[in-house]
Length: 526
Image 1 (cartoon, rainbow, N blue to C red):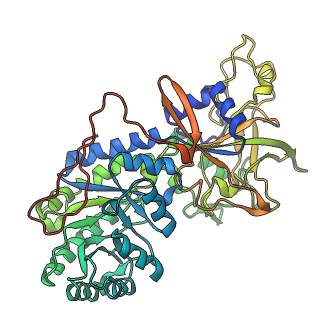
Image 2: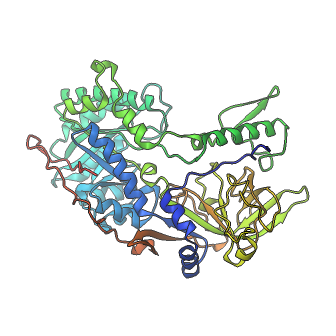
């Protein structure tokens, strides 16, 4: 038996796959709205939220989830978050306006990231919770607040032991200066507690940050302050790969290729962060996160149940409850995992002088790839409806979804060209506009008009750096929902969530009476 070719099969949510398999609905959508297009699935967002709530409900009496709006500009996702009763984390005046327009009141809005003076003035007028990034912000809030109602703030801190230097947050060494400011301006600023964000998939770093923040809580008490919130930030993982073993096999083939063994697996001189020295491949690749197989729910559960040495081995959740601290989260990627795909069309296939095949599509790399990352999952190729008659098997069955994982059909096609390794190229007149710098193996050569589906693009891939060079408009964004036994598709801006039949309404737990200033939270059961 021939060994399978290197492949990076993507994990696809069943609802997304069902829509892609329903060719009448998909083709009707593309005829109506055109290509390329971003498809978002708010029901997958709601399912991800339910799963996170299940973990939180099991471990905590109170908590708050703030959807990180920056992960996607979709109004459908924001409306889904508002309808579910959670809060939202915004990072710009535009995101603030989006949240308010979607129905969020100031008690359910948290604002993170660096902020200029004009934005601070807006936030003070609005009454949203300000997650303070630096001492200048804190001073200006105290000066701008005047005699208005006290401004609710969190203090973001950074510089934890074992964590790399960060450009965000107040360094641990400067926290006492911040506490002095907060104590001196208690009539203008309502200090809710501490916040951090660890840009890492390692829970050990978060546990160290929690330990450090609990120490800061004691120091705040000494300044006459009463912190009651610990914001754990975001950074929960996504699972991109559908087959960890095949992912590892692809990486082994890539490393061999970098050593000159076997067929080249990367475009040009791209090494993806590796370096070759003394006949061996060294380093950590830039795509390492795509190998993750730990879902956000398990990562969150592991964090909440992690023992704290300085607290007698009691868990993070137990110590938070003992100290009447509400834990806040700011998930973006975790809520959007598998909640969106991007669909493009093959314009043409080009063979270079050395035999390399380029599959040119009608979008740019920046529309589906965040910054300089390499997305290590294979696109899915769907034959054009116009080619269906050529894509039938001998018994008349339609070819299913084709990806690099599907290299050996059970039945032999009438048109057989054999597996091919290709690179997907974008539409910009720039050498760097390669959608994939790694070789993608397909069961056969694509043709003009075929559809290309880029999986799991909802979190940061769609909006972080979409290119408008050559005056190309960004892909349209559509919301897809499955209701009453069929798929319904509308423009993202027109989507409205509806309560699923048979589920109980959302209930909110009132704040503890012993607290002077109510802190908005959500503790609803899923």
